[in-house]
Amino acid sequence: MSRTRKRNRVRIDRKARMQLPPVHAQVRPPQERVKDFKEIYIPYSPEDAQLEAARCLHCPNAPCQAACPLHNDIPRALGLIEAGKFVEAAQVYRETSTMPEICGRVCPQTLCEEACVLNKAGKPIDTRHLEAFAADAQRRATGVPLPQIAPATGKRVAVIGAGPAGLTVAESLTRAGHQVVVFDKCPDAGGLLKYGIPNFKLDKSLVDKKTQWLKQLGISFRFGVTVGRDVTLQSLRAEYDVLFIGIGTSKVMLPHYEGDDLEGVYCATEFLTLGKYTCDRQPQDNAHFAPGPRVHVLGGGDTAMDCLRTAVRLPGVTEATCYYRRSEAEMPAHKQDYHYALEEGATFQWLTNPVRFIGDENGKLKAVEYQKMQLGEPDASGRRRPIPIPESNFIVEAETVVLALGYRPDWEFNEHADELKVDPKGRIAVDDPHTGHTNLPGVFAAGDVVFGANLVSPAIAAALDVAQAMDAYLKG
Ligand code: SF4
Image 1 (tube, rainbow, N blue to C red):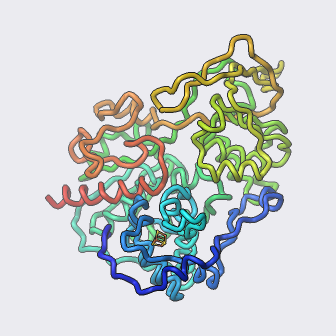
Image 2: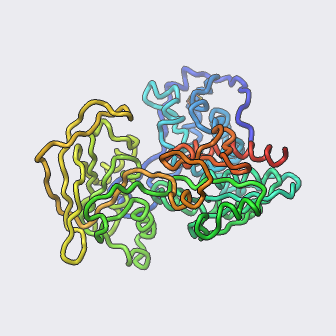
Image 3: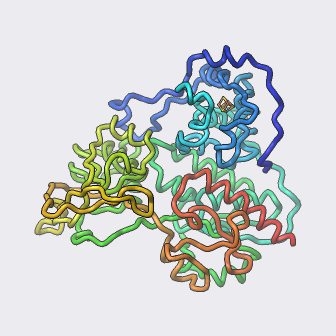
């Protein structure tokens, strides 16, 4: 995949374009969208996509492209969308990205869109949704073409983890002529795309279509296999020429609270996965999952917003409240996710920290004890440190609590890979992020398991770099 390309200057009337009104993708009204788990954005019509793309100023230095972790050639793609050449536009995104239909949905506006020069006038180009539009249009019109595959090298590659990084490495090395097998502990591919991101942000059928396409490309999948438990790292190293580890950060951080084993206390992954099965409110799907009417979500990141927005969609839930130990200003969630959570009826309690969970005589959660906090000096994160206020404890009734307090790599895997060098946070140590070589010869890693929990597009970008290094290693 080419990551850079020299830009031709495009002759356009920039002043006239700056006057054009934005034609941003529309969002379904909150009162309508909370009734289902369908995506909240209304897809662009071809006409509207062309109008929006026609606002692009084709900036010679393309700050949008520089801000994109994958360096997608956004101006060139927008030029093609403007001309109605949607399939060609999709191919431009696919030159640098393995998943434009997914990045166009899950990337936050803080990347390419925030970098757009038109942001200064408050009307940036809706780059993300145009990317999703082009990729969808191609899929409908022609399907995603299978790329040429290099002559078989006879080398075998094991990819551990079928998330964005693992799938990207699998695709890249298959194209390079290597034989790739992907292992994942889940029953399907996608990792957090399938099990962490709610359907109202990313329609899961897109992940399944990507998996089918990868199978057509020749990639084999072994689902339901946990490396470290069902098969050892050592045996995979003996069987395959190289290994890639892209297990992400699938474990939710679980500080110990009194009562955290009560019925009604969920970790975020568990809650989001159960919520996923209530898509479209099929009675047979949600019969086994009925959270109580009052849901408390603990945490202030994007996952907490996803949990709140899942909660407001679940049958029987009447209150979904976020309890966060700092103030609104320190909350790490992206502003747009916070805004949508508010619109959909979630409420927020700032400067509040859980102390313990209180159960009834049947072991079911009935209340949470909190303590009020105040902000002190900034800590290592640069945000003001929350400090407990003495004698400020109070109790709030709740039937469901969701712990959305951050993610870390899967400890089970690391415990069984004792010779693999990891840092104190469980992240795999690599020689250089661009090569991703671990301390074990022939074992590479990239994505969240190296950097910690992050966005999808940086994981794909890192995986593309590491796939190149792995290819060179195999051919060396
Ligand atoms: Fe177009 Fe905005 Fe990128 Fe400039 S920064 S090329 S206007 S999308």
